[in-house]
Amino acid sequence: MTHKATVGSISHGTLKIDDLLEAFGWELQHIEGATTEHLALANEARQLAHAYTFADSDETEDEADRANDLVDKLTEALNELAPAYCYFSAHEGDGSDFGFWPSMEAIEELPRIQNVEGEDIPD
Image (cartoon, rainbow, N blue to C red):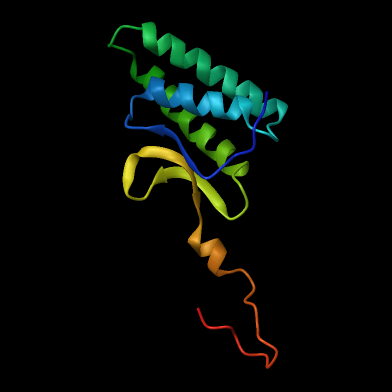
């Protein structure tokens, strides 16, 4: 079952790579609009998260690099599927809170409504 991306957190309170892979992979797998490539990426993330969960604490540098690269790819994919005028990233006020957040820059670029005299309506 799929759902639409909504503003808010999908992962909070952890920066553990296996937690991020699992949360980002789950979201990408279930988000409306995900492509076949997105689903393959989500599957790879969830498999790697599972491997990390049961792995020794001494993963290789290559494994750590692969996991970090995968988190970056998941972030890019989720950003592509973010709601209008939103982005996917860590919250500005809490680096362990990942989700979809309003882009004030994009919102400020929206056309302004004008009154009948052609003047901008004050904020």
